[in-house]
Image: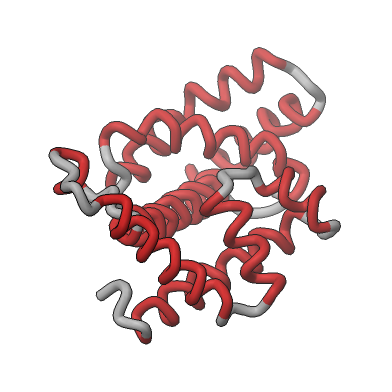
Length: 189
């Protein structure tokens, strides 16, 4: 048996233990793959301050979705989880930075707020509202609940009456629409 086949067989034995609820197996799985997930996160552009969060979130997703992993190398599957999480965080950061700059909460504004901050904030809210008004209702709803209200995917799914996967799909397209529409209006560059 070659090294790769042996690795796959050992991973599947450990994963079977994890699926059976063996906490020691989960701990072993975590310890075996922690460095890999940490390095992957770092290489994909996760800021140092967020590395621990991405690692923990990766293993949480893996725990929830372990039943969907049936073939191949576990590290390949785990890497896809890391890559998707990092990509999602980078997109969220871009959108949030655009929103913060619109609302006058950019880096320069945190240092010193001028007397016309309230006026600029109202103007920014008007711009965001105008962009949101041009979005499809279902996308706008998910975008507003997630980006502006800070609700989780599960909370949004419950409120709008759809699956969590549908929330994430709508949010993905809503972010793209928001950025495109905001650029068209000249709100963001």
